[in-house]
Image 1 (cartoon, helix red, strand yellow):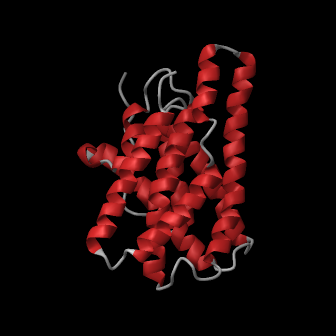
Image 2 (tube, rainbow, N blue to C red):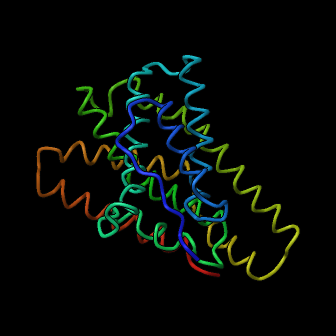
Length: 235
């Protein structure tokens, strides 16, 4: 089976462009593709974030929008690498990108592995870069309060994916379904975002210590990749 060609492009600059790029990725992939499972979940959350920004739900929308765009571009960098530079797919994204067409892996495993790579790895980097670009710090108000408001949207998205998978289990109770449930049961979106915030604080504190900063980034990528491999086991 031929793997579908992924759309690539330059960095996006607005949340609207983020949505357009994700819609292009969705259109290019069959629904069963592991990347499509993650992209579909991420697209829904981003659409809700855009609606929240327009409703002025955030105290500092400039910070939130800047963060959202940088965050998305890290995902798009990984997607671009699949087509343009496969040898340099970011370490954290390699498990999902390499296993996205494997049989025996359920959609929820793909979706959560993508969220694991994007939240645990990309999000702290995006937070660090946003603070650098806007000349602020992660601990400054109201950054964490705005950040926490997004948790509500992500929690709803995660629950939707889990409920969809559980509905399938009702129709097909077997050892495979139970084993898959066991694999994904301990992964939490909100816990991942809390860890991402703490990691961003660590990156901020080591920003003037070049070796420590680089080592932290390297270890982050490898640790996140290890967790994704655990989520993408064939059960």
